[in-house]
Figure 1: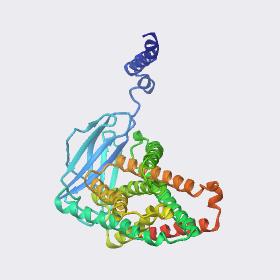
Figure 2 (figure 1 turned 120 degrees about the vertical axis):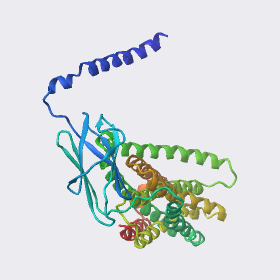
Figure 3 (figure 1 turned 180 degrees about the vertical axis):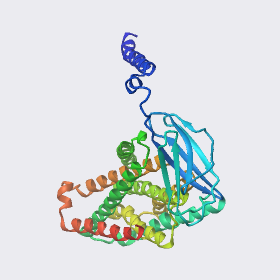
Length: 391
């Protein structure tokens, strides 16, 4: 009992101290009554409906913010606020503006606070925001199949050819896999930090991204150890299967973020996804199937077609779920979290492959071999060239 009392005492004193700080308000006493408030309004989402613009706002600043007026294309406009116009810290409201926007044209929405401070959001290309109905579910599903599922499955078809390669050829192939994944790691990290910069400052986007990536890395390390322990209990188990599953999981998480980006582009009404972009994603993701089966090919054991399809589903199907979530339940916080999880997963898989390549020597020495270096550069080149079509 005494031990628990000593543990609780600091917490009680801390709670009392925080209560005194909130009650006395020392910061307000220093600023005085005439000190202007700190105002930070962020546009969480802007959607377009027939004859109306719907704006989701959040107060990211420490002080209360009152919305006074709304402008659309430099003209003052009427609006309705579902949660009122006075927002406390992290308070949210939705403004519905009955404005006759024009499809294909650019519009600027400007919100003025009671102090006259303007906050604006530009709609580069006005497109009606898709609604959750059977038609758009079907469209997003089809795009996810084209972009994520079929390319990964097509890449798996290289498995019979890969099993015929020599030892040097397998070293080249595993290094090629590392090159492919390393490109995805850099690309995902760039997208993640870019998305985190768009979050309200209160969410500390960069810290959220880094911690989520580290958490995903450590979680997959634990899952990998558990899978290896389970596979040792089964006759004919091999480390290649465990590594292929981990690669499929990492690629699946990355493709989930990819689908999230596709769906979000539709939801925000900023991008019309064209055939060329879908073709680019398809070429880009076909190499992911190659990365998944590379560890299995090195073990040179027969793998049933059903198991290959399972790996393809793990790596490709998340693209569909990401497109659904991004298109109908868009959230910048979730975008950052899933991008971070994908980056952490890919980093863990790269480490696993490097350790497998260095079973007979150190990973650093293994990477210095000629076929390995050639594979690394080939992986970078393939992803860079196919990535140009996506960008």
